[in-house]
Image: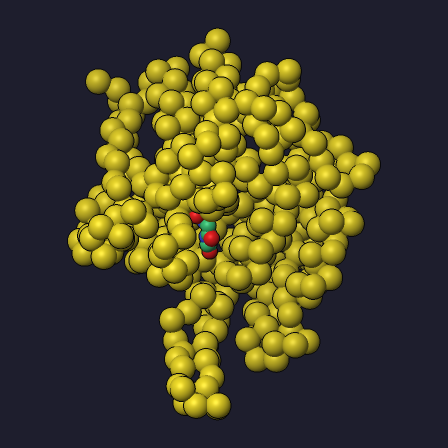
Length: 356
Ligand code: GGG
């Protein structure tokens, strides 16, 4: 019996989630054998398919069922047939909120061997971390429709920016910047157009930044910030943003490094009162689902982030090192990386490189 035994709730979810998840589990088994870690994977079929059969993405006591697990590994959520807001608010968002996973970490790195769509960029030029607020902001269920069925029909939705919510995410961004070489935090804002919540965000950013005089800061409105991601990705170290801005930036960032297929994310409950959840940034990709051509690296790298959170940093670092080795080499590459390999061929190459 291993001294480090972990119970993992596995939710492959929808679409390509079902294809990339087995590759992450394969890699976890291999790294487990090397580092004396054992895993008990409890798999749950919570998904749009379940919604179609049972009328809900997960059972009523779903969160209670996984509350005691050490971590949650999630694939992707959403599929045609179920409205996107129904699937997201029926599974992913309740887990993030009930388990107080207010910190979303989304690393962005240009790797050797990856076809970069930006001209004249080389590995080292793009290496930053998007810190996304994960529990409030623009993602809210407060609002409604009025004057329905009349010419004055409207919809409203309230964004929520609490002092506690802003301060804790901004503070984590500064703490993380302190652990990095460049020690710089960029704030994503839009305080010219969004005239109440975003000036408040700026105010909290300024207040918290005073606690970290050793960390360089800057801030950009989200529109020009997206342009800078493309034109000047080397400017960034830690980028902190609200729920929506963080979501958008963490798709754009990896796209600038070649493919969103490799992008991992961690939904962290820093207090460890609840399990944290690890998922690739990408969604269920219905356009390619069922073809076994999805890139499994985002899911595998997410599993590595899970190991780091569980205190197994050496094992986590080894997985990331091997991913970089495989991407840089002549081995299999999936279509999004310019190759023709299947999901399983790339997953197997990573697992094999790890075991050798
Ligand atoms: N990997 C989970 C997934 O399916 N993400 C797609 C998505 O649209 N997520 C919404 C969000 O992160 O806010």
